[in-house]
Length: 271
Image (cartoon, rainbow, N blue to C red):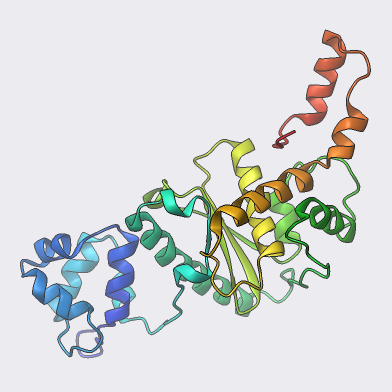
């Protein structure tokens, strides 16, 4: 193993971000200076950790030794990611989430090679209007033949249409959700530490970004407006306003309200 070892600098950066470590943390692990760590991370520098230091990194960061010898080079940048509440997320957690997303892409590509009958994303064949996200949501419901009833399992729905959904690890628990396109395929990441209702709304919110904002060159521009548009899309997609009103009881008594609650149970909407 030692003779075949080739340390991948890019993988050290991913490991650092994934585990939420600083250069100071890595320097302490390897008993070296922060300057040395900076040189290890700098792809223009030739210095790399030796075999023994790579073993130490593997054990300390709880990553397989082969991780640092991998040649997988997919890179995701903030400008292509729809982060929920971007401005409130610390850079440390964004970096961890971004590093994790690169693993997710590698996982997807592995299963695509091994399994031939996975659902294939066919695109969104609708004219999206960011000023009318509710209309886009209703159009997509029509294309997916969902009718007007509430959606009970949105994750299964997304996956059935070729949208990959991943669970975020506890290291990035501060991140609610995010999504992006990779080679034309939409990928959604959800925080399963949140309530089921919150997670469903987050999934629909990310779907809204994928539908409404897929042509954006930089998703970070006008993020406040985009977040509001995605919220409006999510509410209408999970349960159209017309359905909410149509199913509401005419007589507001306890029995009718209990019956209505059962219809809405498990559905997250903002009406």
